[in-house]
Amino acid sequence: MGIDNCGVLFKNLALIIGNNTEIKEKNILHYVGN
Image 1 (cartoon, rainbow, N blue to C red):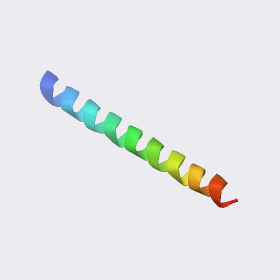
Image 2: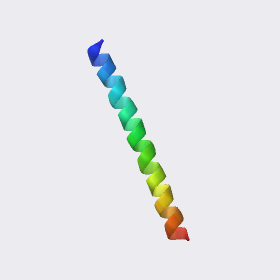
Image 3: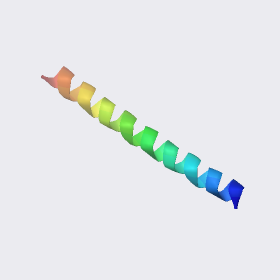
Image 4: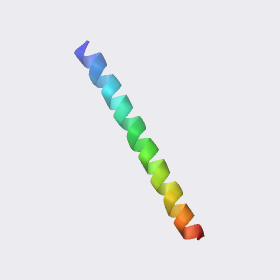
């Protein structure tokens, strides 16, 4: 159970980090475009 929970937490963290980097890249492209 503990290992499975840790795996889910790491997957969620990876998704959150991935979403944050995507948003940052879009913001940078938006600012550069302007």
